[in-house]
Amino acid sequence: MAVLVALSFLAPACIGDAAEAGTPQKSAVVAAEEIFSGTVTQFTDRSLTVVHTVPGRPPVTREFARDGKTTIEGKLRGKVRVTVRYRALGNGECVAMHIIVRSVGRAA
Image (tube, rainbow, N blue to C red):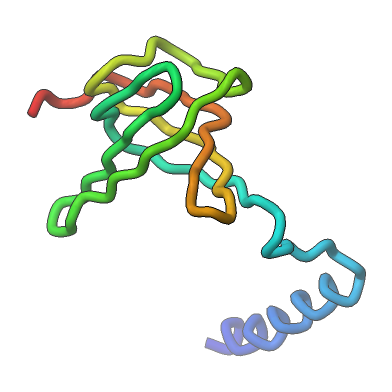
């Protein structure tokens, strides 16, 4: 218990030191890179639609734009599990930067 109390006092100090040391802060203007995993439901040369399903929760579907800079590891096809590293633009659009094909998904 004493260790937890001691550590709780150290955590804010560490955060404060990093902020004071000039650690770069994320800007809201810069497009953020994020990751999304799920099963491919639809894809074309210009787009990719992926659905992420968790039991007991509603499915989350995301559509990603693809361009000449999008790299793909594996063979992209329908009903495969993928992990997509993407850039979210300010207008709500998501651009896939890197797609990793994980495995064949379950047939629906």
